[in-house]
Image (cartoon, rainbow, N blue to C red; front, side):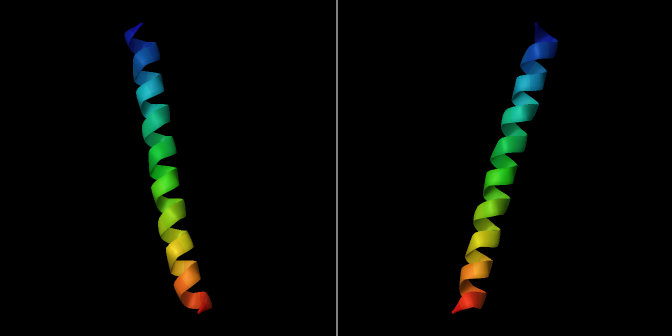
Amino acid sequence: MSGTLLTWAFFIALMGASTIVAIKLQKVYNERGK
């Protein structure tokens, strides 16, 4: 069970990091577009 929990924690952390990076890139792109 601990292995499954670790996998889920890693997956959620990865998704969160991807979302943060995407938002930052979106802001930079919007600023360059102006």
